[in-house]
Length: 130
Length: 100
Image (cartoon, rainbow over all chains, first blue to last red; front, side):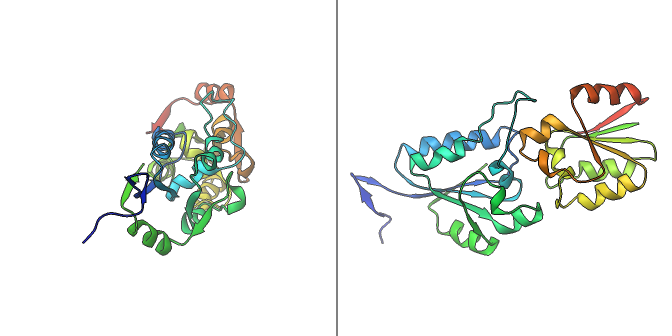
């Protein structure tokens, strides 16, 4: 039995999935998740992000926070690609329940039905929820 | 009376609690994550529309809609207010309840 996976420069690469279920500006969860994801990128792990329930609202286009003077971190999702975080999964049921489509989102994502998302989640070494 | 809701309709039952209590001539103001309830195609859309049809004045805070990228998705029957309008609503109504 081996718990070793792909070796890269002597380190073990694990599959990390960050699951986001909260709307972006009503609480600190979404921003905190982004911070952790960016830190994880520095460790060259196999990172993916899942957006479920109100978490899909994190990816809305056209965010303008001038009126509320809250820090707008919307563009950070676009910068993830630069950190080799390219696996962004959005649950189809969550989008549909909010009257949204992929076109409403600020980044390219893979839309998956809940059952597929569940399979993907089950394959991970580590699942971190926000 | 002014009823203020600030939670997403998907995450809490605050909007439902407010809608059970509203009376004709009351106003309902959606702020923070509750503004998602004012968007087209959301799960609470029918509830908001039936409240509006029953004579409840429904408002949503525009800066909160803009911050969430949904200002262009507001459904018919919902009026937008800025912070000044928020203050006016509080001042106009004899009392208010925040459904936290």
